[in-house]
Length: 250
Ligand code: PEP
Figure 1 (cartoon, protein in one colour):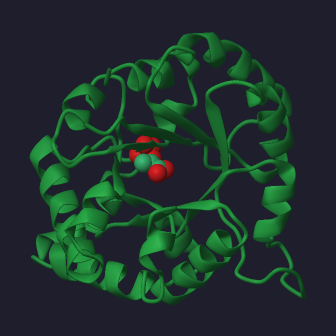
Figure 2 (figure 1 turned 120 degrees about the vertical axis):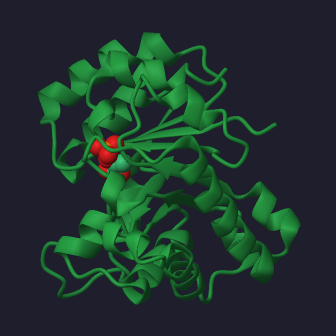
């Protein structure tokens, strides 16, 4: 059985001092876990987070990267800049980026490819909106996001990639997908990957669930057969809550 990946997404929260105290509290709480623990923090907190996590079992991620290595892209960060900072992971295509910043499957693919080329491990987010689910389009949307968002990703590259299924209607809303909804959607996503890359590659792929996961619902979600971990927003801001999620799968 795979261990789980428990990844936190702080979004636009916490300054450097808060980052330092968060890690001081979290480290002893999760030191003995067998799960992989990742914290994706704002750009300005990365140096502090990397330093705090040095020599521990915690991995640090950013929340976005650009597809070019340098140039006239005001406000963007190149993958190599993240690598230089000691970052290992990067979230790509989060629904908030797709909704508020015009991210498309094509730009998600470009960012994923650039992250991989730089040696980062992308955490690529996919998921349907409430309207898409209610109109019976969940599988169609997920298939499109996988087909177009991973168009020229090789099997070797997919092996260095994590996928997060995050139904948009569950993110930050307090409405969690049921255990079965999460598992069914992830199983479907895995079958789409299997069509292209084969079953062995798809089975090895880590596909996380994200959307209002917390210390109360994590154990049941993580117990589902296809749920390989969680991407956690709000509940990753509090060390005790995040640690409880990490320990809800042993
Ligand atoms: C997220 O930001 O990826 C997320 C799942 O947020 P929340 O846990 O707050 O719903």
